[in-house]
Amino acid sequence: MEEYYGRYTNTLDAKGRINMPAKFRETAEKAGNGEHIFILTQGTERYVAMFPLSEWRRKMREIERKVPDGKQRRILTRRLNYFASHQKVDKQGRINIPAHLIEYAGLDKEVVVMGTGKKIEIWNPRTLEEYLRSNEEQYQGISNVLDF
Image 1 (cartoon, rainbow, N blue to C red):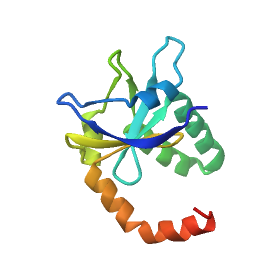
Image 2 (image 1 turned 90 degrees about the vertical axis):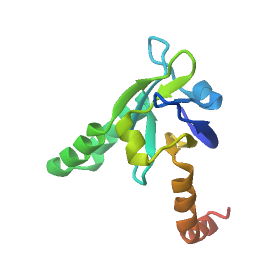
Image 3 (image 1 turned 120 degrees about the vertical axis):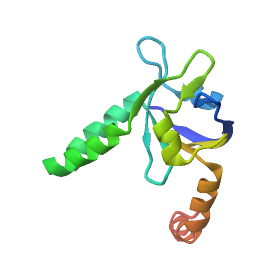
């Protein structure tokens, strides 16, 4: 099972691509044709969420199990899939971020690529710093429970 940890500062090129951190490429499962395939979509806090294809499929099955109401399930899956984009890591280790996701997350030249377990998040550094700062008090309360 793929798991991603750590953060890396990266550059978004003029064509909307970033270099995948080498550690993440090493971790990523390859599809049958030997390619690394990810699904990119809107994250919940103005970042780009990037799921390995196998994890995306698992999430879709999880939604079917956990959201029993058909209408709610359709609302959720349509929203997630409307913004989703199927992307492959190219031979140079780059992955394309579609323009609509760049705009949503407010990405500029510098980005932070962060592993959060089973997914990768791509943030505007200023947005991430603001998010971390605004949630510091909550983090302290939660982390005390876990003795971090």
